[in-house]
Length: 193
Image (tube, rainbow, N blue to C red; front, top):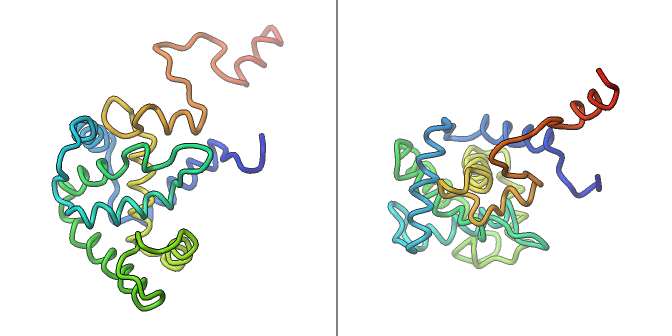
């Protein structure tokens, strides 16, 4: 495995850290419902439910720096912004105002530091610098958590458009698995035990 690949164990650890420091912690049914509604919204390019177009653009820009597009697709291609909008419109709607406040604080810092009114107008280096500054704050951890959830959720429910997230981590979607299931099972079977 190369240094730039994220192990499954490291991915789960980082995901858990994001959830722990987030405004929002979602249950699996909430994630699945949000994904399904997000998928429907993506398919028809629907209007956002609670986010204004400027807010959606800003949240999408943040998500795009959390899981950027490089040699592989990122949060933008996975349609993560629809997932975020769906979550903030659902049973977690009480988190909409803290998220808007966090965004306003980030935009104020962008204005003070760089003279730009929006996060999306900054260069990628400036965006990364600002996100590094706030990486311990609940707003950023919530954005990271929602981005990861939208990126790797079940595709038939909205996140992970075109299996982008699963391809990124090498997950194989199979109707059923045949033994040996993994390295340890194969090793066990090879020993004849």
